[in-house]
Length: 200
Image 1 (cartoon, one colour):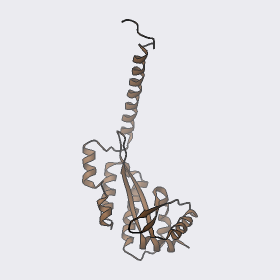
Image 2 (tube, rainbow, N blue to C red):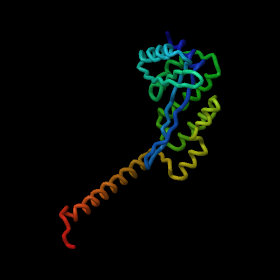
Image 3 (cartoon, one colour):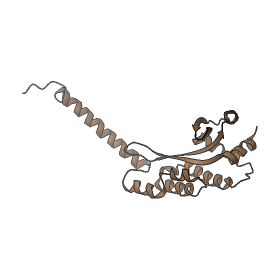
Image 4 (cartoon, rainbow, N blue to C red):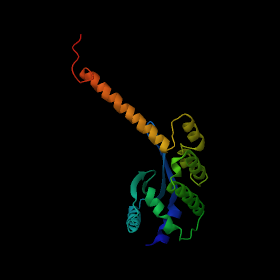
């Protein structure tokens, strides 16, 4: 069992992709996570062997079971573990068109590593690359955060760049909320000193 063996599974039954989700906070941005996925139909033993192999290189992964016209086992390598695979995959020879996807995915990983996915420009650049990858039609439909929608969310103030200015704004808002809660608590107590108001 080696990396050439693993690459065979990725080229045959795997894909290089990105997880794109939006937080629920008042000031939020997109969470963009690099992922490598491998699926096997009714063969969990192979998936477990892949997981055990990756653990030797300090690469973590998760396994889930899907029922879609039969039982499928899916292994996903995400975030820093997915990026850790790059130094091993770069040494191998790809034998399919999936190499083009790998190069594009690797470019996205570089932007993420450089923290550019915290900026509007970086997010749009990653989405531009992601949309050119050879994904299935179903996956394209799941791409809710395409360039048009992301631009709209930024314009409507529903997405923010994570920078020093935003962090200061969040801290100021938290400070205001803290003062409001303190004053609100004093009102319940009956006055500034926390004593019951008997003036009525």
